[in-house]
Image (cartoon, rainbow, N blue to C red; front, side, top):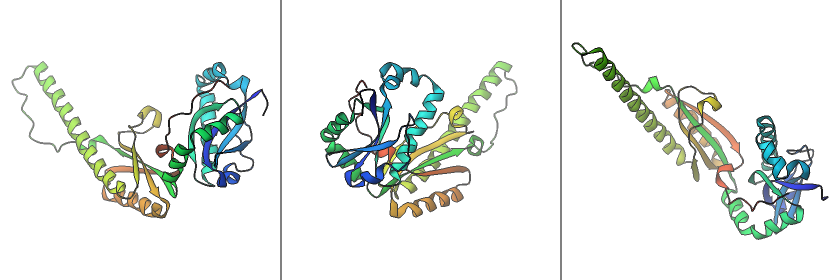
Length: 265
């Protein structure tokens, strides 16, 4: 380390997994080699980044540059994924920076109890994501007897139609949500923990219709095949629901700790 560099943190693992925690040739957000800093029986997967490019002012400017942010976020998560492929890790939030390696060691010492508990909680378990999409039209009420609009003023007939459309949409959403709850209940029984996320923005996630389920499930590794088969079976049982299974992922949703105290690199 030199005074011109700061330490960017990617993940924390156990010290006995430290050798595998930073696969050879792996590079980080600044194209830097990824390495390991050990302390308190733990190991942090880190990289040395130029302080001039990652101090508070420079980082703020980077975060407003969407192209830089996308590229750096992808690199950050690629490091975490690679480290997770060799052992259990606690993913750390993007842009967790320390002044130097000594500060990282001190942080590991101060927070070893929290990190050890989180690692124990996810040991032998992996995160899987399940999203459910529906076409609202599949859940609209069956056509019934329409109230005759004869004799009504045009404005009154229009308002009645609008009211009916709103009620139909509400009914469709309720029915779709109830079906999603059935699916969730079936999957939750195969997981040891669940994290529920809000629906993604359709314009950003590029899907049509409604997203009625966006959950993460912490699944024991010896039940992963059963969990995947259950998703497939539920998709066949409820063809009006499109299910999307993703994973395995590092346990992003199940190792959240209070963010380490920020430092000025």
